[in-house]
Length: 203
Image: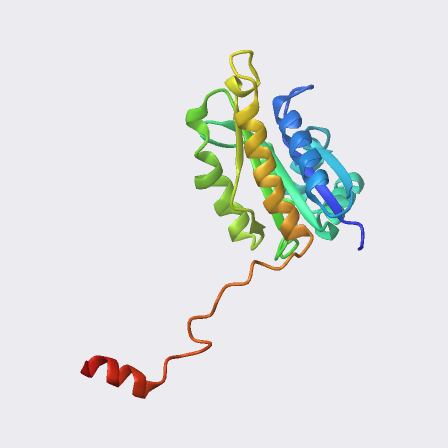
């Protein structure tokens, strides 16, 4: 089987950041779930912030940003994680995907994740991130992963977050590996003869 190439986009602004930590956990879980270990490249958007801003103004990416955009376009799958500010993704995260070329994400499996101070921001995954990637015609896995401050703190053992990470990574890996969906019986494959239906109604 061909080795899969995955790109991980982390929009964390601090270093280290909980956003990068979640991105690493999602990447590691995906690596375990894939049929064979993938080639994983992590992109810290904070390192490309100036080039992203320049691209928005000039319409042309710098040399390093050009490499990142090419890797995203060529990847077999994308893991995208952002901190949540004001109930939505960060400006840097949105700006990066504003400069990603049209059609680069068409049909590409994408696993989305986010971090924030409170669990009340978790819906940003569904009302902001998922619609954006759907607009870009990516294939977003059903399970999105949100990690609040309490998921990292001493109050919890991290088991709930680990379960969400593993479930999302399993869905993502199935898409990246192009595994067929489970077969389902077709109700119209063997239709009941019309005469039999008539006789049942008469009875």
